[in-house]
Image 1 (cartoon, rainbow, N blue to C red):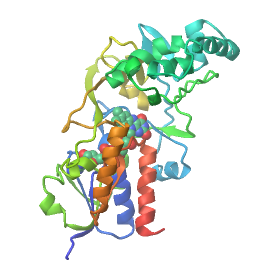
Image 2 (image 1 turned 90 degrees about the vertical axis):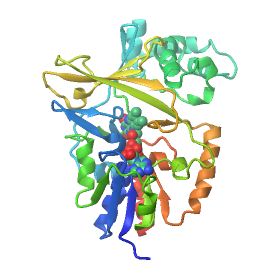
Image 3 (image 1 turned 180 degrees about the vertical axis):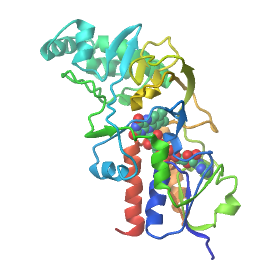
Image 4 (image 1 turned 60 degrees about the horizontal axis):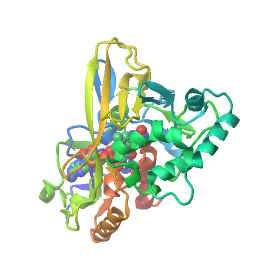
Length: 368
Ligand SMILES: Cc1cc2nc3c(=O)[nH]c(=O)nc-3n(C[C@H](O)[C@H](O)[C@H](O)COP(=O)(O)OP(=O)(O)OC[C@H]3O[C@@H](n4cnc5c(N)ncnc54)[C@H](O)[C@@H]3O)c2cc1C
């Protein structure tokens, strides 16, 4: 067979872009296609008035994987952004993650000992094994934090009452007895200067990219264009949903431009009461310390998802994981296709983990 390329990469998100970069660096001929009209996958940012708007949801790069941090720093300089979101519960503002600033505001206390005593007392409300998410959360952090900061937010996210959600969804709820508002525990954190799109464009430098091309629509043309295909789209869609469709939670974003310099004073505000329909408001300029005279804010609404819509969070319950296992069996029969990334592997992957996974694939394929 006469192939035009060594590799066809379906999807110009981070998984595809890293693999494409590494294959090209090794002298392979590479073609990248994406059905969207831009590269960078869900990391894509649109620049308006000098502000990078995170079109598919707020993305903060954080990792403890030194090799991944070193890797991404080849393609971008990262700024010193530290994610310190705030929760708004009926107008009361609380620092996240749950830490001494949160407890001090909630109970007018000062010391870790005082906070621990209150939480320990409130946890006693649940005796025996937690039967649902509500009981599980209270048994971990007590009633006040649950009522004000977890209940409404979680119910909006899942579209179901906490008493109807299984306990296993929340395994841990980290509580920090220090005055530390840094959301992540990771060693490295930041936002690429100039935005994520630029970082991915650098990875793809020199590589042929065709945008607005859906592999599944043009299967005849692309199936045998390359020796190997790296496929980062939804695995069930690739097989025509033959075993059924995998479920996701959907999101809906509403973005507006406001004629003011600083709207909420922080990049992320979570709205934790149940009767406000959105879960968060993102003010994008704060990711890059913007000082523009205008600002862009995005309200994030969770919603049910149907096939064909943008897929956001996989529903990793037993039913869906069993279904995914069936697709893995089908995938094994596709000799020249490797499935990867968040949609190809039906997995919630942070950016650093998806890059690590792509680099692992590079190691396996090129035997290094
Ligand atoms: C709301 C939200 C917020 C997030 N925030 C963070 C965060 O703060 N920090 C963090 O580390 N991670 C975050 N993530 C995770 C991050 O988005 C993923 O790690 C990343 O997008 C995975 O990259 P990928 O290459 O696997 O997939 P994607 O980025 O989704 O790229 C896949 C690409 O394949 C293309 N494609 C699919 N099917 C086809 C087809 N048939 N033909 C052609 N092209 C196709 C798609 O158009 C897409 O561009 C967040 C995710 C969500 C949903």
